[in-house]
Image (cartoon, rainbow, N blue to C red; front, side, top):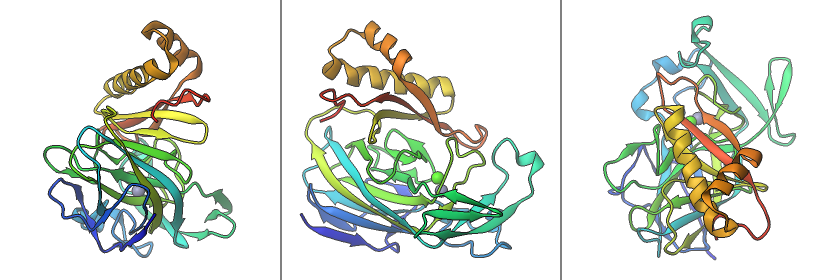
Length: 300
Ligand code: CA
Ligand code: ZN
């Protein structure tokens, strides 16, 4: 097992099969992606508003990493070993979310105490929930901006993508071309005003490849749940895809017919919103989760 560290300067603003890989690694290797915050550090003080920055520099993804042996039709396995953030993050408004009519444009520079795992918000302390906002692989066809979400991953903004989680991606191009960025120190489900606690930091992951396993979209495995993730323009479209992905993945390990799977998902499954702050500004990203059961791994 080899270890690699990727400098935050090595970043792109899109997922693209034509991006030159910054490193070639093998299954089992561990990579630390250093990342800048989603604003590429253009915001430093309260007077710097999101609405004033250069939006061409928003949401970069460090990388890409070429994983040897990852071929089209395989699954790229990304186990998140660790996430670190610097000692401050940004909380912002920028005219997104359904409270925008009641809010001013504001930047809050929020101190983080990593030793105690908390961020200071006015008179309160918020427990950190360090997560990766942007993580994905190159799409088969045209490039996709890192701020967007799709079947390749991207700006999924799931608070379940934390240390200890594993993210599975369909490999669309040789090597997969993994990029990571947009680390949040904390965020609630839905990312309700379109921003988390935006932090520079790093994510350390271990990659692996599963040969010839069909996935259409990303899947996340946490300590106790399996999630299918889908993002579309409407809740209905996204939920349909995530439900059908879950049903398909359950057929093998559970050995039930589709109707029993349907009934079981309704009894034990949840739908949760990764990001759905403002459907006029961005598509909805959601996840459908079922509890992990020993001997019934959805992907292995
Ligand atoms: Ca994000
Ligand atoms: Zn972010």
